[in-house]
Length: 318
Image 1 (cartoon, rainbow, N blue to C red):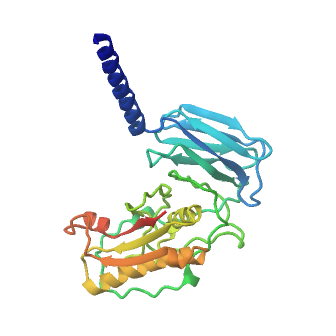
Image 2 (image 1 turned 90 degrees about the vertical axis):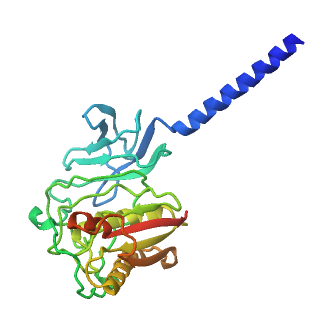
Image 3 (image 1 turned 30 degrees about the vertical axis):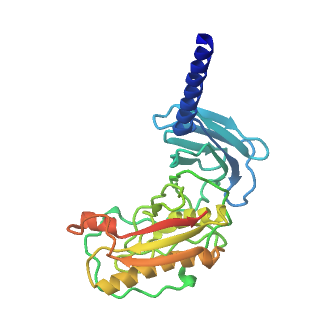
C-alpha cells in the first residue's frame, strides 16, 4: 500500500512539473527570429545575384551574413529579439540600411521581404524641408477643411512582399525617379524631415496609432512625409486580404467643435481614398471622425495637444 501511494504521488508531481514547464514555454515566446526574402533591382525588380546582406545588433555586432545566389534569395537568423540593423550591398548600387524592431512577441519569422537596391545616382529621394519648419506651435483654427479627391492622392508602387516588422529606411542622395515610378504625396510648407515608421503589426480589436500619418495644420491635406506610412498601411491591407479595419480621426479641442468633427472625418476619408485608389476594397475600411471627444493627453499646452491630433486603426476582422 505504501509503494502504491508513493507511485501515485510521484505521478502527480511529474504531471504538475510538465504543466508548469509548458506554461512557461508558452508565455516566454520564441527567442530567435528569422527573416527571409529577396534582394532585387529597385527599377527592374529582378533579383541581384551576388549581393551581400548582413544583420547586426544596435551596438554593431554582426549576427548573420550571407551572399545571395542567382535568385537573390536570403535567409537570416537572429538569436535574440532585440532591435537590429539590416544592410545590403553590391557593386554599382547604393547601400541599403534599415533599422528593424519586432513589435509582436509572437513573431517567429518574417518572410517575403523584398529589399530594393538602386544604381548609384538613381534612387528616388524623399522631399524634405528646413528642420525649423517642422515645429508647429499654432493651435488648430476654425478654417474650413479642404475637399479631398482621389486624384490628388499619390500613386502606389506594385504590391510589396509581406513583412511584419518595423522598418526605418535611411535615404541617400540621387536624382529624381522616372515619371513611370511612384509619386510621393504633394509637398507642403509643413513638411518635416522624412521619418519611416515601424511596420504595422496590429492584433484584432486593439487600437494602433498611425503616428506618422500627419496632415497640414487645420486641413485635410497630407504632409509629404506621410508617404512611407501610407505605403506600409497599404502593404498591411494587401498582406491580409480578408482583414477589415476601422480608421478613426481625432483632433485637439482648439477651434470650433463641429469643424473639428468634420476635419477628423475628412482626414481619415483621405487615408481611405488612398487605399481604395490602390486596389483595396472600400467595404474593408470604415472611417469615423471623433474630433476632440476622445483625447489621450491634456489640451492645456501645444506639447500635449499634438498627441490628441492623430489617426488610429482598429482591425475588426483578420
